[in-house]
Length: 375
Image (tube, rainbow, N blue to C red):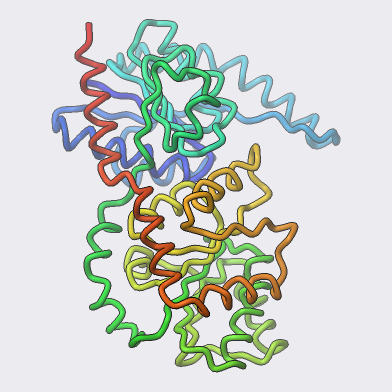
């Protein structure tokens, strides 16, 4: 069986695609898996690191704001769009896939559409509660649609062929969750509340600013917490400046890093997570059952992080603070309220856990293998 997976743009599209590839290989070790994407995108690095053959197709999005630079970019987009059809056809001819899967990003469009027109079996995976434009356009033409959450089913526009399967979660997230006590002991957490906060690998300025206010409040009031914070690449100096300005410092109650490279372990140790609301972050919070304060990024297509976050708030698993309402005072007030209620974080964690689809990858792989075998 030959499989072609198209995904690009962000890690939120590419990591589920790689997880699905791994699940297919596990279910059918003879499967030959190829990826399509942009060489300039993050997908090229992640896919080639994982050892899969990569096929280049250049496709970009239209810029809505009018400026000279954006007009140039839109002309390039039109040119790429004109070339994408013939490139996708050549890809089908070279690979001769039995199955083509789109996992989001502009690159999914021409690749999946070309496969569907040629009668090749096709599938989509939508990670967000508010689906992306590409997946909404493709959904009527494919054989099967996977949605992460029930809220996306109607919005995708093909409910009769849509299955809710959750978002694939790295196996090590489940494994480390079982080691919670050992990891907490290693961190020296004792019976303190462990707070984990981050704003993404590059760092979100606003998240760093309000977390600094929270850290200052924790230290000033000698709260029994161990706070672990990742500043992100662009937040390192900013956070150092905020430490001086607000009179707090890393030490026994606060650990500050640029980047978290052991996220499964820290999620296992945490009692409360403060973060953006990317689909994969939320799937991992559900998998380990952690309470959260979610700050959706306003700089994403269709404001999809807000819709993702609201699914957790509705379930009593998180408190959502939109960036337009976000202040240090508001974050302190929210966290203070949670800490003041014994058992509150544990209850929210149980609510998060009830949302998890632990066998997401098995469901996806089973449905795909069944699809390929269907005459």
